[in-house]
Amino acid sequence: MEQFAKQAAKNPAAPQKAAPQVAETPDDDPEFDFDGEKYKKSQLAELAKKRREYDRAASQRMEEAAKIRKESQARENELRTALEQFKQNPWALFEHAGLNPDEVAEQRLAKQLQRQQMSPEAIELEKARAELQRIQQEKQQLEENTKKTAHEQRVTHWKQYFDKAIGSALESGSLPRTAHTAQRMRNALEDLVDAGHQMDDTAIAMAVDIARERATTETQGLLGDLAKANPRALVEMLGGLDGEIVKAIQRQAVERHESSARPKPVQAAPKPQPQKPKGPPTLEDVRKQLGMA
Image 1 (cartoon, rainbow, N blue to C red):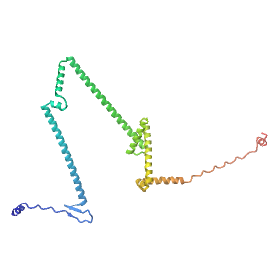
Image 2: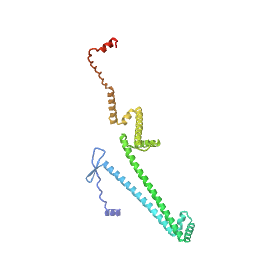
Image 3: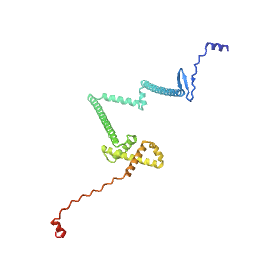
């Protein structure tokens, strides 16, 4: 006991920091005073939550980085091992590739012997053939690159054209630029192309009409089904009785009722034209009356 007492005397306990004071508040979100700054319990909980999320994300990033470093180091070690094995036994590379090293060596020696037996003219001819083959391959690659570039340019051109043309058509056709409208336009254009129409402004205008008609039919069918099944749910879906859509429908109904109930203006009867005064009968009139004409 005395030994423990002496050790405790040599290492006195560090003064403990005073616990934060809890302010008395009537609600369930008390305040804590830390060195003169007050924090609510909810604020401290939110800070602790953010700190845990940050630590978790940082730990995950560190683990991913360590995994990447480990995989990279493993690949580097494999390459070094393969290089050392190749230096010690070059033929092992052919065996690893599934080739017979002896056959590869024989083919190489046969080719060298054949070349040594060739005349200078034959050697020059072989070089010319190899150069011609290289030029043909470069020409073919250049043609393929040119075709690919031209194709990409055409695709870009038509994409810009269709984006602009379809956008203008949707705007003039009073259709919204949404994913559903774009899908309807795509389906309508595919149907027109399958029917033999050319892809031009006329086809785009026709596609807009088709998309609008399909959207109208689909929407009317959906709203009609909802009106039959649950009118209240339909009104709530349209924004409620105080919503702009329902108010617009009510205004249209009132205007239509007032227009049908308004009496049509009665057209006034045409005024009789005053008769011109007749002059004295002529000799010809007298003959007609007596039947002598």
